[in-house]
Image 1 (tube, rainbow, N blue to C red):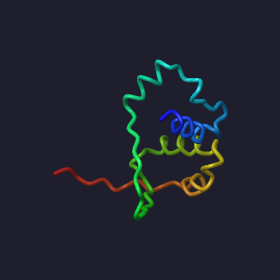
Image 2 (tube, rainbow, N blue to C red):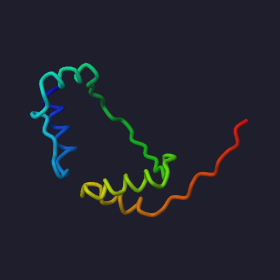
Image 3 (tube, helix red, strand yellow):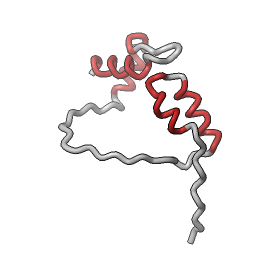
Image 4 (spheres, helix red, strand yellow):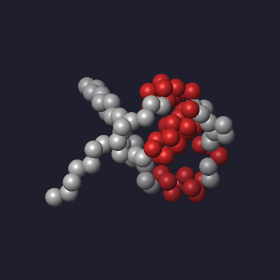
Length: 95
């Protein structure tokens, strides 16, 4: 599992200003976190995608997400798509 976690941390941290490294985490912390991690393998037989324009976030949250995505070149296409304001969902009355 350490090999996979090392690769995952490296992949997701590589474009940050101060990337974390798996090897820098304390043994005690890693051992306590590993009890919460489940690893599995599966064969993908079909992929379906959906593009969601909003997760019900307010404008301030969306702006913060976009600003953080701008810091990572891996997400340039997402930033371009999401930089335009998304209209709010119409509210539905509760019954």
